[in-house]
Length: 228
Image (cartoon, rainbow, N blue to C red; front, side, top):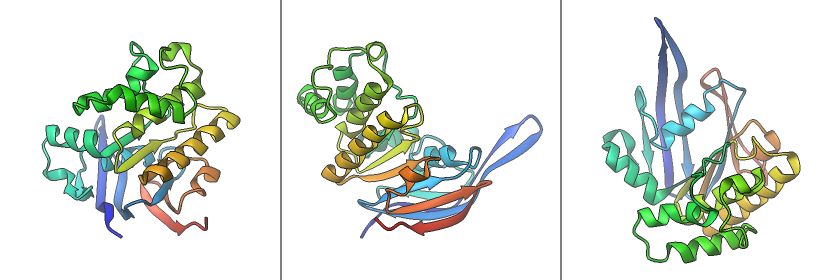
């Protein structure tokens, strides 16, 4: 199968005063189209930084990333934004819904940015799929954490992304609510044939994916194929 993400010899560091902090050191891996993939490791191991680099939200120091057939380093800021808008979906631990927009409007935003004339129709269908068909007119502040994350799920899939990055998608949810969100995430992902990359510290969640990459101290320490 075709590789949708290819990471080669990635390095990233940040300056803190006079010190240089190495966050990622010589990271290489690839993910195939349609695969489910988890990145795990303790806090401070570089998981979220790696996710942001792979999605083109930040720039690498050295190495290269090929996402959806394009080398991120070669793209301008606008081209990277266009690639994300057309091919990439995101789910964050803190939901990142727009507080002044209703649930329906939040889900429709990526489609409207693409100029879709059926944005509202598609958004309504997705809210139905995540069990919130009757909550479209509610604002984020009127929804529980689990409901907000389900809206975020619907939004992430609204532009039918080729690849979806989920950063600790159940991190702010209780166990029962988190399990429901995970079920929805994997069901929608399977239905739409999306590639799914999850950053998590939850090994039970990671084991639901086909492959696990383990980071420690900014390096890859293990890569497993998980039996489904």
